[in-house]
Image (cartoon, rainbow, N blue to C red):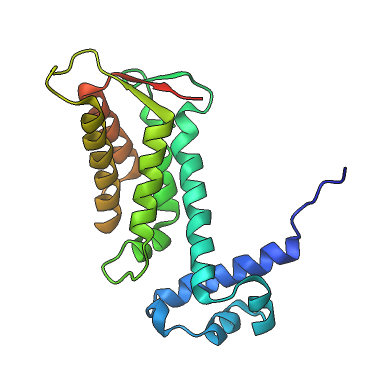
Length: 198
């Protein structure tokens, strides 16, 4: 059985189109961008564009999914080989999620900005929510018996997502290392550890 490897020329063309679209979106909205502008900026033909995408929205969707996949890898990095995360002993340097956002600063500021017309924020929130829900089994040593644990987890998850989104929207006003430390302090406040679901 033969193994199919991705065509490097195809990858190069697609990446050039994604880079071109992102660059153009820093100047004007997606609605005002023409396919010809994207292909000209990418240095490829219109035919090459239509070989891979039906419309510019498909290109943006693929770019967004690529970035969310990279975000997922960064999110899982601290526990990829663990069965439990003990937040009391987890070093802040192991949390590389904020480094991912900082590395892709232009993309996230654009996609989460006030003028964004896509649903990226909702997609990103759904992906992070799914990761917290599917990968983590929260453990609480002490919790008010009146509190619904599922609702409490929802509250904590969306609080952490809000922290990330606001940091991006404020223009990364704090260092990534500071954000990692703060996230750990917040997690340790009531959640000493989480079990990892494999």
